[in-house]
Image 1: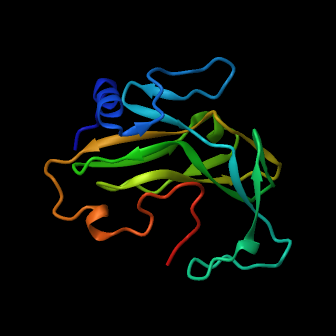
Image 2 (image 1 turned 90 degrees about the vertical axis):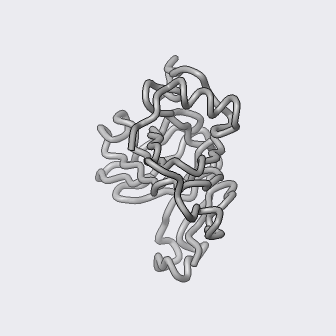
Amino acid sequence: MPIMPDYWIRDMATQHGMIEPFVDEQKREGTISFGLSSYGYDARVSDEFKVFTNVFNAMVDPKAFSDESFVERQNDVCIIPPNSFALARTVEYFRIPRDMLVICLGKSTYARCGIIVNVTPLEPEWEGHVTLEFSNTTPLPAKVYANEGACQFLFLKADGVCETSYADRGGKYQKQRGVTLPKL
């Protein structure tokens, strides 16, 4: 399963709409970097956040997720409370080819601050805004900056085309837009 280089990512984004909007180079001017890198794409976090709170004594239940588990914020900065968690989404909309699996790793700038970014793999023929999970592992409040780099996507090419893609299965998160909550 080879990892795909910058020129392949560029071609797939510009000619086939794999990443929209697409930034053709690393942007860093006073920001946490984003855009095309040597073997990946550094995506930005949007300004839409859902920050977990215990104000309503809600329980986090993946089978019966309650809107009372979080507060919504739309801002240039999101403050995540100590030892807490927030959901966000990428600015970019992704369309994954049938012969690809995409994995994501958090940016080192956030990791070095105790902020962990988690994303599950993007499966063949999945498309949508990627929901990002930010965990503040520190005992201090932590900032996440909207419209700046949050994580890097790595594109892995399979040895063959899968028999059944995410789209074929009718995956429940297909074509998601915005911050998408857990679904059963």
